[in-house]
Length: 398
Image 1: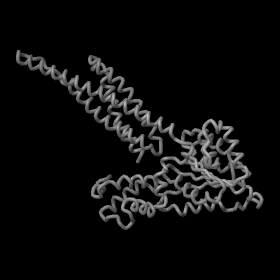
Image 2 (image 1 turned 90 degrees about the horizontal axis):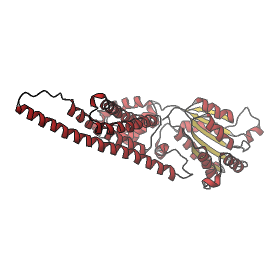
Image 3 (image 1 turned 30 degrees about the horizontal axis):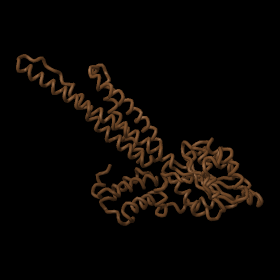
Image 4 (image 1 turned 180 degrees about the vertical axis):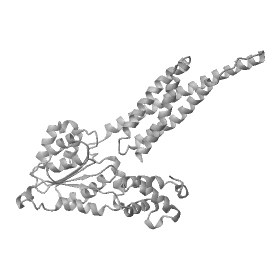
C-alpha cells in the first residue's frame, strides 16, 4: 500500500517533468522569463522524483513523508494544468489577417494571449514557490524529528500501529510458541555444562510485511520478565551504530546515557559487555540489513552469560545464517497467513467480527485477500483504509 502511494506520486511527476522539458526546447526560446522559472522548477521536481524513488524502497514511509507526498501530488496536478494552459495559449497558429477589421481582431487576440501567458506564467512562478516551500517544510520537520528523538526510541515507528493491535492478531499464537520453544529448549548436542553456559539465538527471517517485528515483540513481551535485563532495538537499512549501542546500554542498564557520556562505538561495546557479563539478558535486534552491522552489534553480547537469549529479525537468509553461526542459533522462517487466518484478520478489523461481513462484500473481500497474499501488514493496511469507506463503495474497488 505504501509503495502504491509513492508510485502515485512519482507517476504524477513524470508527465509534468516531461512537459517542462518540452518548454525548454527551441520552440519556446522567446519566452525567456518563463523559461528561467521552468528550468529551475524542472531541477526541483527532478530532485523530488529521485527522493520519491528512493523512498519507494522503504517498507513503510512515516506520516510526515506521506503528508509531503500528498502535497507534491496535488501541486503536480495544478502545475500540469498551468503548463497545459500555457502551451495552449502559444500553440495556436496565427493566420495572416486580410482586412482592417481582421487586423484589429488579430491584434486583440494577440493581446489576450499575452495577458493569458503573463497570468499563467505568474501561476507557474507561484506554484514553483509552493513546491520549494513544501520541500523545505518537509526537510525542516524531518530535521526537528531527528533532533528530538530520545535514546530510548528503540522500536521502529512502522511497527507501533501493529503492536497496538497485536492482541487482536490472528495466526500468531503458533509461531510465537514455536519460537519460545526454540529459545528455551535444551540443545541435545551439548553437554549439561555447555547448556548452562550457552547463549542462544533465534533469527526470524521473511520478506517485508510478514510480521517479523510483531512476532518478535510478542515473544519479547512474554519472556523478558524472566531475565535480569532486556532490550529491544531496531536497526533499519542505514543504522547509526553509536545510537543503536547507546540504546542497548540504556535499556539493559535502565539508565539514560547522554551522547557525551556513553562514548564511541568501542567504548559502548566495552560498557555493554561489562554490564552484561554476570547477568541473564534477553535482547531483540530487529530489522538487520547487512553483515557489517551484525558484526559490530554481536561483539557487545558476552557469551559467558548463562541462559541469555537473543532474537534477530531480517529479510535475508544470509544474515539469518550469519546470526545463528555467531552463537548457538536456530533460523525461523516466518510463514504467510493462510486464507482462513487472512479472512479472520481482515473481517475482524473491517467488520468487527468474522460473521459480520455482508454477503454482497464477500466476493470483493476474497479478491482483496488474494492480492494481499497472506501478508499481515498488507491486510492491516488495506482494512484500515477501507474502514473509512462506505460499504457500498467497496464493491467498486478493483
